Length: 237
Image (cartoon, rainbow, N blue to C red; front, side, top):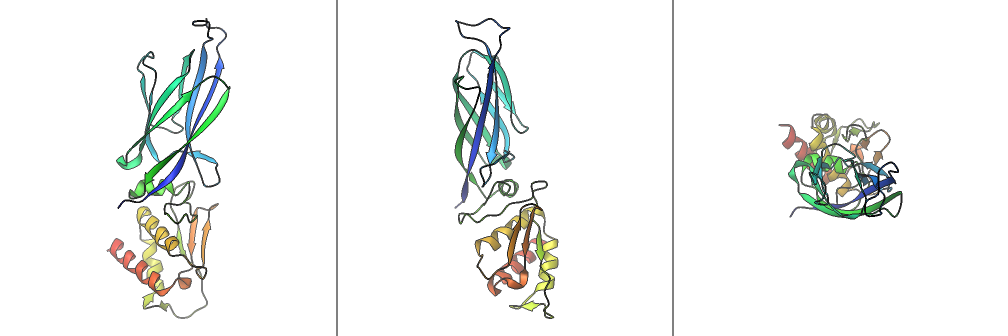
């Protein structure tokens, strides 16, 4: 069974009257613009990098009514005199599916925004990495984020005064070295394993500002250490 998470997509609309153009059917011509964002855990707007492309399906009276955009914020600008229900298709990274949103394009306000909640699968590595920028990728809702610059969670071994590097039949030094050899996608798996099994005794810090997910390996329970070691061996051999 493929797990999924919810994300909130914000559709932002701005518009203004074009006084130099003649009205149509007594309605003034307007310039309008739509942009698409994602909301993070704090409700802040961030680039919607989970999407590969966005297609706007305009009213059939527009020339070339299906417009495709591949760069954030997937902005479209057009002119018109009347509002209409605008169908928007957003396509997730790694061919993870299409989501359709119907947006009420109207001219009641100069600027307005409408939020839509969509479900997103978590089984695609690149998509999961981008999802981390906006919040958790597990059902437990644990907070964790990737770097806002490169999206790569960093796993570190905290310094310890202990002379022994063996805990629960796992060599901590070897495990720490193995973690540095994992690629970005596999590191996401480490973050998920640690967060899913987190207990109050574990020393785990999510340093959002620096884009780091810091783990004191010595504070992890023996069972989790063993699982991590098996995971590292599997993905570095």
